[in-house]
Image (cartoon, rainbow, N blue to C red; front, side):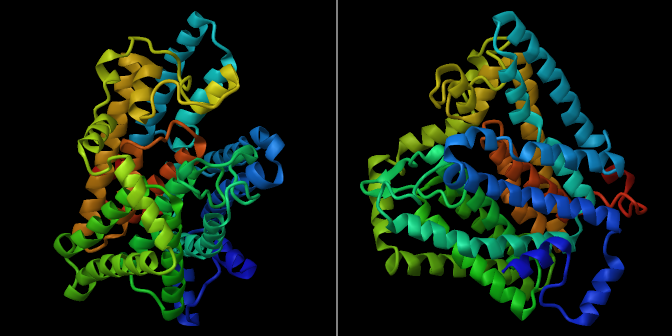
Length: 464
């Protein structure tokens, strides 16, 4: 497995003929671009290492490992700047300008309320630190890099699923059933705990599953594979659905349904052959049959748990409809103060600093908290930028799908929703996965060419 990981990270060819290897070598990006690609891979692996360190290796010092990726990320940005991969124009210029303006406005709030400046730094970090990652990935990743990354994710899904199954069957209090700091995760139903995989919390794990699912679906639907690649992807897909079943998360099933609908839409959107258009329907149908078989055999207890949880939480009722409406139309969008309470002040990390207890003090919904923290003026700027950018991601992905490539749209089924509504300002794990997926979406859509080549697109596309 370590050899396979080395091949995937370094760009070695996995299961391809020498002719295909020569062809890829001729079209591969320059070595200086590949360095950034490899660093992006390592940064992703550091996210997983962080979770392992915070919950199992150094649980008492877990708060220090909360910043494990920060020096790596800053070093990654430094390399990107020196190599011209990070240019302040187009969407990146808009996000950078908004970040500077919102951060300075919130600094004034912190000074007026005499709040700890460290919380301002943490708030800016949560909101904006991973945003440039998307634009570096978009400029440096080629289709071959996206495929290698997807195979890496599929390979990692197998041992992660094994850990999740062990967590599911082990009793509460087991050394394996812990989150950051050695604290147990929340209960799903009686005697069943939410699984965390190798991440520091069950919520982070659920986001990771959705991220993985969108990448694997993009690879299954969007491109043909060799026999060895197909076996790896099938194993990774089965492992991902196994993680979903034992996760105890209902939200990840809504995400999976969205990915499935996008996969089926390939039949109507893309201009590819009938065989390629039917691939999306077959993938969605196969996934549904696999989930049914797993629920009926190995994980019947999990199915009963979901039944009980859906009944107790009234999942299929007006309560859920109201909650979904609140996610997209928060009350604070009109009721928040003008200046806000301070950037990042409503996160669990800020609550831990102020009170010693991690809790959501300003609302569970990310958009709700954005308005409360930033205030009406800066909050509307930030949320409007989130929504507009998410819709743009969908538009370029649909455009790519109309030309016969569904990969960008399937990755965008996670990325656009994450930018639009998910908790990307709560924790850097969410932000890392969301902005990474955004970069992969833009790269897959082909909206920007590698930065050392003449741009093949029109001027209209180059502005972004």
